[in-house]
Length: 528
Image 1 (cartoon, rainbow, N blue to C red):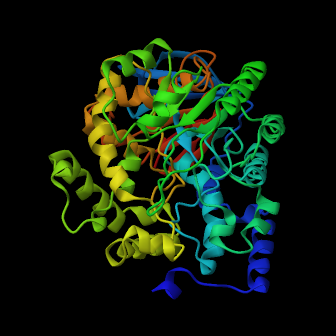
Image 2 (cartoon, helix red, strand yellow):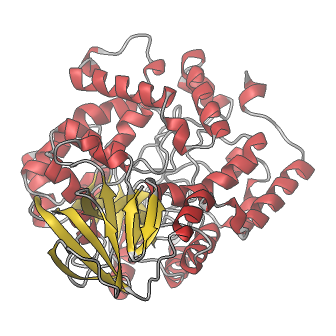
Image 3 (spheres, helix red, strand yellow):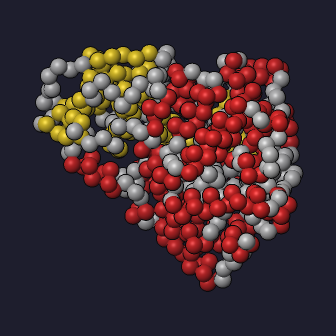
């Protein structure tokens, strides 16, 4: 079994794959947008003219209302007006006749990792699949209605090449906010080094950059803060827990108080928000004293007290719970029998939904080779305990922790919601088993957890825009906002599943995805 899941490779083999990776970083043909684009190209849309989305049900996520028979007018990437349905098409602009479909602002995924592939481990035979998946992630985001993403830690060189391609139009993808790499102390989360994956892993990072900066002392931290910020980071990402999430590992290093002073002084000098990965109460108690902007994920090892929640609210800290991670990484295979404390109706239902998704729908969002490997790795939880896994250098998430996320995390999330804390919406896509293009899974899980359908949309639009510092420009469809619009067949306030397959997706006024066929009749575009 060790040979199957931890293959060794020669230096020559690895360097060959490194060269493939380095080349793929700059090659646009790994994008999977051609089929959708060819249909859109045939529509011959002139973006120099104004565009009208006509005869739609326009949803306002701020107040949860729907305006029937509306028209939305777009000019040069911005919304310029909202009016009543146009009865006769004008020759001055292109009209999309939507036949009463529902229009929402472009969705925002406020926590993801766009240069990660969702793979549970490195398989040298899957190198090309990894390369395809990296580029495919952006197209999957657009196809799901995610017109903006917030990347919470990436391979910086790869990320910047992808962003350049998106901006040039050679890669179809969302608007990207990012932190570059995670500003992490050496050995902190995520505590898997490139050399853990392969002896030559560090060679790869010469081409790709590293997802973490791994500073060892304060002078190095100071230098890395400047370098990371100078590459266009719009915020700083920290990880503040003191225990590993890897099955079989224990405590990990944490920032000293000197390090934290250096980080927050730098953040203030550059006017950069600080966002913190935080799953554990120990890290929460320590970091909440600092001027943090957002907490990523949810506390999953203790219940928050009323004072804790009041502190979050008073400091105006936002939460991006990435609650779907609990479902993704809580695997029954780790137990002979699920412990009584996790034997709840909510957890049973989430496990049923998760396994059904993995068996059927998941492969639509992930390269087949990657997903097949992931499913095979589930058997390792039954075959070996955590100590055996780590001794064989097999680095898998600890599922027990994520069962805790569905127990403690659910209660903590609902308590913060009740307190009126700003709650965003993100998936952590890119981590194992958590694939891009599935913000709808987080939205549906939030609804099952107790959020109303109106609240769910607000989390994924208005609240996320606030967290990004883009209020009034993203997450809404009103005059002056970016014309990011998603057309849905069904009313999402009736059916939360309506987000799964958008009919049309516009980013900055440009049609980037059309699931439904459209035909042109002069200056009017209709569904076929």
